[in-house]
Length: 116
Image (cartoon, rainbow, N blue to C red):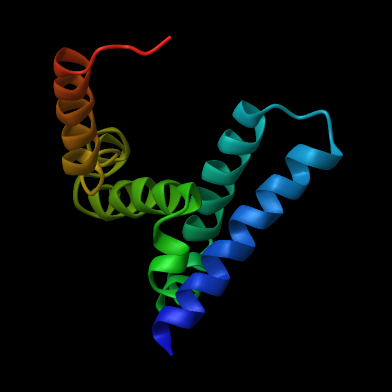
């Protein structure tokens, strides 16, 4: 049942973003930033964590989950280090994923010929 809930919630988030793209003049960049920001704001208000517990990967995998993860790291570090923690905690949780994406995209770029 958890897989079905994750699939439906993740699909709903993606469908909503696609609907915004199709019905407005917003660019994909606008929708991406809005979705990440919405995840960050909801995490800051304490609303994204219960949503994520309900939806599982359906709330974690879309980019709103990335915004939530950044905010979660910032708030955790801010409790320990004060204002300084807001800056050091930005990539506390997401740092490994960002580093992996940079390494793998660089490796693919080096070994893959571009297609025209």
